Length: 474
Image 1: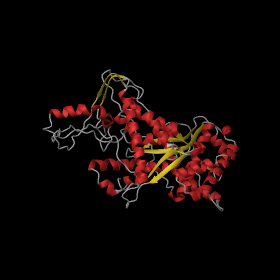
Image 2: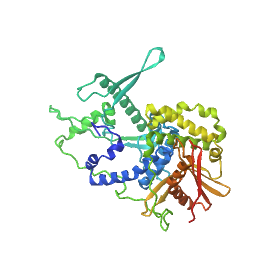
Image 3: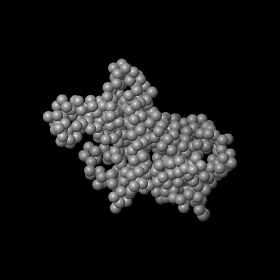
Image 4: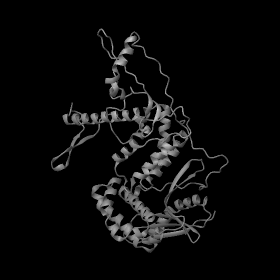
């Protein structure tokens, strides 16, 4: 929100901000909030690509078309993800800039519609660039400005300036750094325009508008390219052409042609995912169990569990032989970095990183832990599943580890909580009772695609604890 920056999720939940929307906008935002809220706790447990794709599908992305472009974006997310998430957002942004669309294989030879970025690497007989008079970006204010400058001994120094205070009229250093950014953006606009214009082999058509100024001399009002537009980049070369057209008729300078409303490709506000015809809903419990509340464990414990899950998945995928004790011991700095990126406070980093290390080390030294991570038939980690509840609404689940051995399908859930003091067996029994419905729900979903006998289990990496039971009969 201009003048009051706040996280997007907080803004989405702000009643005052929502009331400023149209009724249609409020309906769409309510639907987005309803879909997004239950998925946020899983955003660090599932691969980023899977998490974004599931939300995109639930929102109806595939129903709007452009599936190939969306898949290209998701592939890029998958390629850029690391165990700590997206480590370099600048590199991701640049990679997105370098994406271009393949030609539409189903289109005829008459027309192809795409953005300037998507045109990279393509060529056409005729290229039309419309809307050059539109501004390409806003004049936003960032919280922090910085610029790298050459320093002595071939090193790079960093010039930093915070946004000016509310009582300040100006801040010279901020103004200077913003000017540098504006120059960089202008050069980038020139580059982009050059890329788009050179896609034409024979004919290039440039379309743009220039509002009339407020001149009162003999020549009357003169056109002027909107600041920040691509037309402004071309203005030294095309200004005389606009002035010539304006000179033919300035009498109607105050008139404004009514433009047809822009057609938007969007789904109805009440759009819902439809079942395929004649297909029964996925088998789900008569009353779906409530989502387990992890807030009791605290943010630090939750983030620690997220990182343990990530590395257990990585170990299972790479194989136990690739994870000797020396490799694990060398990852202590990486654990602290990852936990900090997840939001663990500085004073808690050392202890949380130590718990992650202990959980992984104990799993790799535990006979049952190694059995869980061993390569098995039909094995999967962090397996996403979706079922429909009794109201036909999709419910999303993630199974930590599953595989088949000796004809039995195993479904295993990791629990990274710690337990101090006595009564360990009683604690494990209470955890089994707490999560029984959750795992049996996983079993009902997998039973729809696998007729094997099912065993359910909880594994506690920090404790070496284990509880298992058979899936109840149908």
